[in-house]
Each structure stands twice: as C-alpha cells, then as structure tokens.
Figure 1 (cartoon, one colour):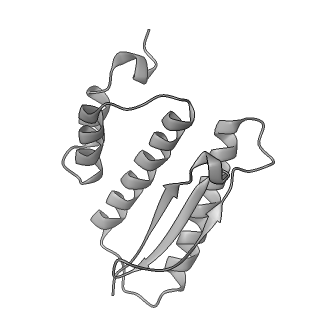
Figure 2 (tube, rainbow, N blue to C red):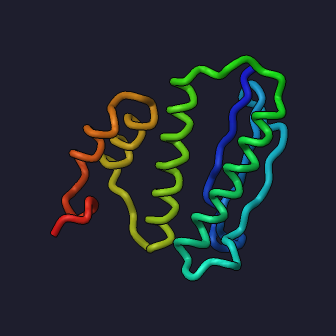
Length: 131
C-alpha cells in the first residue's frame, strides 16, 4: 500500500486556506480543512500557518500507518508539490495569474524533470527579488 497526501488551496468563497486529502493507493481515506490562522499578523502568515498545520496533520497520519520506509525520491517530489501548491495559492490570492509556460516549468520541477537550481535560474528576475 502507498500512503500519500495532497494539500490543495481552498477557494476564497469557502473561507480560503487549505484542504488536506489523505490518500491510500490514490484513494481519499480522510483529510480536513485548514482555514487561514486567526493568530497571524497578515494574510501571508495566516496561510503559511494553516499550511503548516495541514502538513503536520498529514505527517502525523503518515507516521501512524504501519509502513516501510518511504522512497526518499517520492518524499522529495511530495515536498516539491507542496511548495509549488503553496506558491500558486499565494499568487492567486494576490490577484495574479501564472502563464501556461510557467505552469509547465512548475510541473517539470514537481515531477523531478528539473532541479531547484535550474528552476530558480529560469524565473523572471522580478520573481527572484532582483531589481
């Protein structure tokens, strides 16, 4: 059996935040909703804290499964997916959209088709904080 999870952004009209899906062999067997934290100073931190709570819940669930040590590559791809999902949600909440070409680059990064260095080098200079 394969145990994984997904953390997906929730639509603002449903309260925003994140939806956790706990998956067993790609079938959802549980999960939860993690709204933006009330204890944060700003919207970005509120989302970050909610994402952290969702991830913590996912890791606790994974730890409770009677499994063999997971494939390190699969764990890395899961971390990449979570990071990209978080970034996309932040961009969307800011009112911006990502081009189809940039979304393709993100998919390649998440799928392991490119490393972090290559991914960051391909970002526009304004996205890297350069002026």
